Structure formats: structure tokens, C-alpha cells
Length: 210
Image (cartoon, rainbow, N blue to C red):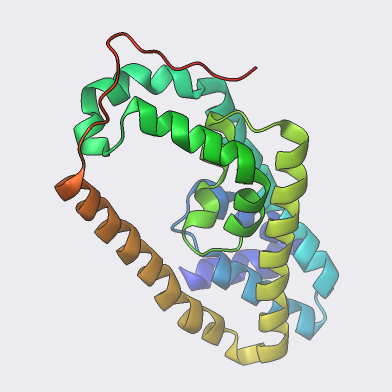
């Protein structure tokens, strides 16, 4: 995978970085660690500027972030009510838990979106709860951009400083991503084994804040 990413960046410059970071956000298996560290290497070689690479990466990633936010906002959490009622046992969540998650998100949405953008693996998924729980557009854009800029800058600067050893970025962060996935899988299995639905009055519905 690294070869075609390198070729696209070398041939297309900033546009290649933007396109790849957009794909990375929409299709998470494409690693931002390689994209942005390679961009930093190109900046060291003088084929692009470091600031330009960071801004191109941030712009492409934010395009992908916005895509998922718009999709999730259009769907809305209410559409999932029948699905959760039917498959809550396998999803390990019921409607009262959804309401509690919504209240929690209302309080901490800005922190969640900002710092979530800097966590490997889940950073690409942050837009989904933001859209589903109805986070307003302006705070989403501001805090997503801050977090995304921080992540892309970190990777690009690392690639710039490491030069030909840029692959060390992925060597260090790759196990972190694997660890995050392992924790999520173990947490899900724990939830499957221990989850019980919350008793609630018959016919209770989900009332979303205006």
C-alpha cells in the first residue's frame, strides 16, 4: 500500500495529500500515519512546504469528516429506534442507554470531537455520533478542525524530522492502533456477555432536545 501512496504524493503533491486523507477518513484502513509522514518527507526534500502539507492533509481529512457528519445528521438517531429495539441484545444497547449517551454527548461533545480526532482508529468514526446526536455544525467544524490539524501536524512533522526513516512513525503508531481495536473488541465481548436491558415503562419513546 505504501508504494502507491508514495507515488500519488510524488506525482500530485498537495492534491494527492488532500485526496488520500479524504479517502483515509472515509475508508479508515488507508493509514494516515503513512500519508502524512510521507508528506513530511516530501517537505524535507523541498517538493512541498511543511505547512502546505499539513493544511492539505487537514483539508482532505475534514472533507471526509464532514461527509460522515452530514450522513449521520441526515439519518438522525430516531431512525435507529426500531433497530435498537429489535437487535439491542447484539448491539448491547437499549433506548434508555441511548438517551444517557445523548445527554453525556451534549455535555462533552466538544472535548470528544476535538481529542477523538487524535486517537488512532476511532478518529475517523467521531463524526458519526456527532451527527447522530445532533451536534451543531459550527462547533463540529471548529473542534474537528483543531483535532484534525493537531493529528496531521504531528505526523507530518515526525516525517519531516525522520526523513528516510519516516516508516518509524507507522512502526510506533501501528501497534497503538491494533491495541485500540483489541480493546474495543474485548469491550464489546464483555458487553455481550454481561448486558441486560434497562427496565422501562411500556411505550416509552425517545424525546430529542430541540
